[in-house]
Amino acid sequence: MSSARLNGVGVSSGRASGPVVRVAESLPEPPLGPRPTDPKSEAARIRPATEVVAQRLTDRAKHASGDAKAVLETTAAMANDPSLIKQAEKLVIDDGLTAARAVYQAAGKFVTALQAAGGYMAERARDVQDVRDRVVAELLGIAPPGIPDLASPSVLVARDLAPADTAGLDPSKVLALVTEEGGPTSHTAILARSLGIPAVVACRGVLELLVEGLDVDGDTGVVRASDGTVRAAATGKKAVWNGVGILKDGHRVKVLGNVGSPADAAAAAAAGAEGVGLFRTEFCFLDAAEEPSVAAQTEAYAAVLAPFAGKPVVVRTLDAGADKPLAFLNPDPEPNPALGVRGLRVAFDRPEVLDRQLTAIAAAAAQTGADVSVMAPMVALASEAAWFVSRARAAGIQRAGVMVEVPSAALAAREILQVVDFVSIGTNDLAQYVFAADRQLGGVAALNDPWQPPLLRLIALVGEAGTALGKPVGVCGEAAADPLLACVLIGLGITSLSMNHTALADVGARLATSSLDICQLAARGALAAPDPGTAKLAARAPH
Image (cartoon, rainbow, N blue to C red; front, side):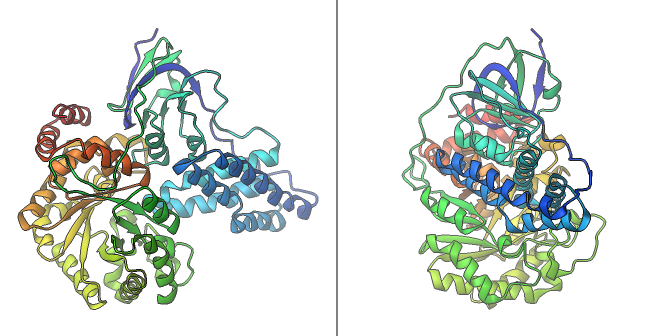
């Protein structure tokens, strides 16, 4: 047996061993030719193929529940997207492409747009690629790529997994997941946690590892060769949470949801979220050729706020710019968009866009009765924070804060907290900027591990400032979804945690077993650690 040992990023806790099953790669790019002799008939093949794919996904969704069901239904809707079908048909008629090639190219435009949008939207590009491959396979009459039928419990190894494939996994057959690419905030990571399957992503070299079996540690990210003997992870009972974020010593911590659509909001409310810590408003703007009217924005926001009448909701204003191109903003080309005019910086030149959005948010809050606050993204200085707060107050919104996702904002936390009502730390982007590591790039995913001690030390600076000034400090990045790390964050002075709805029960239940002094001990140990693995071990010791 090989003694090979690889390191990736552990994204779903637990440890398991078993025989390896490799997942087939994505379909190769379809050829450009031959040119169809009857373009109209060729174009007519596209819609039936998308309907077949959508129906298969819908049928799978009927046998799923929770987040898996939602992912499968969303992917089915993508397969039937009229704009995708229309673009593909046009490429056949106008450019003489085959149906398969046309679908491939049309989907490519959607993928590029989502990747350019960055953050949460960029992570959804994998969904579109999955739909593309399924439809292309149907048109070519070949089996779609994906997870093979498992005859016995196995460890799945893949370059990356499509969300729809991950959603359909059977935890009794899948012992663990290991992917060469992906990151801590990927859909694969989120779904693996919701299914209780140990998972390691960004494990470079795992596809070249020729071994019978693997031993996978979803906590440390270590993947070792094994003899293939099945050693299943201990399957704990599903977390039971009463819907109140409180430690066993009575210390209160709000457990909130991250949402970006009405469906997200409904799912978060159903999962017991005490409110919303991050409402991403980009969904209202992404497909807009012109800026949506105040009335249109109000209607869209009200649909998200409605499930949270009487509960706190923090609305993030438009996080757009050169790396998230919106047609009506007409951004100038930039050599390095991630470091350019994005987030609140757009509003410095176009304050009227921000003012109209704030007006719509205030109107939606009044309609729904949600207890709405607003916060601005990409704030670097206290002077920027003060400018935003003044505009929010002018729009009739009394509680205003900012995101801490730029390192300078963490270093200036005391000055910023003196002019805002609260801050919320976006650990995903903060890590990206601290380590100069693109959160979408598998090759540097280990740097974006939320357990990185340098990142935790910056969070500690913000927590200390909040405690000193008596101002709330939240975390709305994926770090909040890790139950053990959630305890560390509380020990660092964090007062609210906001996450994907699938993590709410696990985090809430874990907090109920801890106390503030234990969280503070765990935090001190993690801060002093030299690396993420040691930080996890140090945090686990007091519990």
